[in-house]
Image (cartoon, rainbow, N blue to C red; front, side):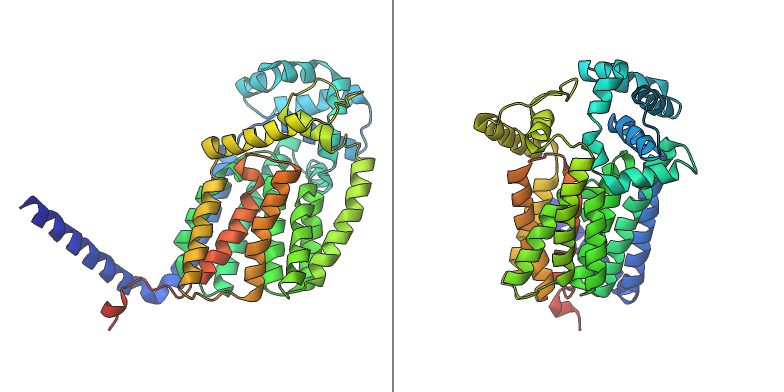
Length: 395
């Protein structure tokens, strides 16, 4: 009896779902666009109202004030901390200045704090944007704006992408992709991840659409916002050649970025790959002046293992990549079509993630966010012809 009742509920639920699918089939694309717009607005609103205040904001404000002409170390230190102190809850400020030895040292030592700015000056576009907007609003508001607006634009570019692929009816899958890829964190944190993600996603969309001039401009701007994206551009350039989808835009972007990398790292006072690696994965030293640890294979391998474990336990990016990869495989087995440039993006994304893990492993999903989005959007595009209703019931 119980089994029969459950089966009846199951059948009626499927019938209701089929009826609803038929009812909305004619305007699924419009509904998908509205859903993406609503999510973009929600993401921006939540990012603005419920920000995550992180220590890096002090350094970005200092770098922005330095770019605007302030050079005195003591004044840079004082004004950066004061700008943030006036804008965040007192409890947050205490946590960011007293929570651990490193934060205490940075709060009390202007010279040590200034030695860290080489890590931040290399995000040239982001620093200049903060400096410019700080003339119109507070530095804290500038940082917040550069997170919430680009995060929302990421969603809108994705909607445009789906529209071009005639896949807006699959907008719920794209929404799930953004949620699983922790888009909320991108919008809420004060970092260049949102603006670099927007530029990157737009650049890859331009690559798919064969807009080579836009590819070059957007991927160079992506590099200027976060230089580590040069790895993806290089991989994309090579894979595009190998898969016979050559892109002069990606080629120009890579070589311009390569030249820019040399200039920015030297003029910005970046301490170098191994010092940055050590600082990120081994210890937060209180000053980078004279800090030059020897390279260690053991430290490198331990860091790789630590990143892998933390990614599996604390983050979502590996899970998202596995699910999207499985979906790609299954769609390919079923004969789903993928255009040559979309196939190039899929292969380049996997190889670029592998390359970045080897060069500089990072566990936080925010660092992989734009790669997950472009990979997922291509896979969703492959699903454009998937029917909502069983074939036998469409007549």
